[in-house]
Image 1 (tube, helix red, strand yellow):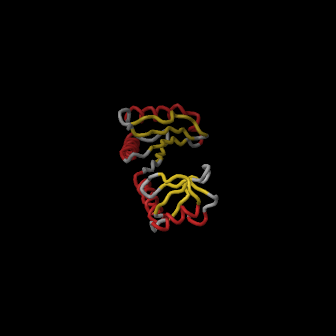
Image 2 (cartoon, helix red, strand yellow; image 1 turned 60 degrees about the horizontal axis):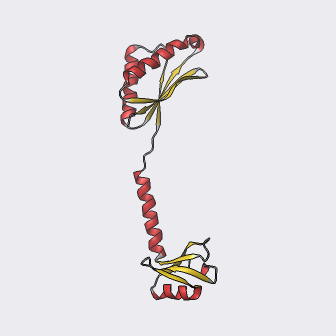
Image 3 (spheres, one colour; image 1 turned 60 degrees about the vertical axis):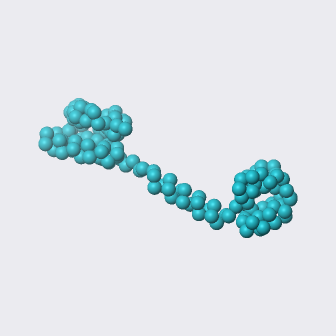
Length: 163
């Protein structure tokens, strides 16, 4: 910016976007000073470097506003986890399914984990049946992002809302 720009001559773009051509750095600084603006280097690797006459403070302010606006519009998707045992009773399973539905309506993903303790791991097919049942109940509302698979003593399936 201004005096920190290196090089004997630069390609200058006016504050209105008009090309002013290749001119010596001193003359470019004088043009910027006449308009009470700054000379800002926008393409330092070009030959000759490209500079633009602009209000640098206003430029930084607008850039900051744009990044804040972009942050405001982005959505963060969380993965909510529901843990179930293979011998979970009917009513409790329905409560867990309602929780999963609530997570999906909030546009979050749901991770369903079946926990096996002790000798229950020998009956992992019961866990697969529970996950199949959950999948059938939520058939219209979800996309299965990760098919059921064993991870140690846990059986995991990840569900995402249909868009």
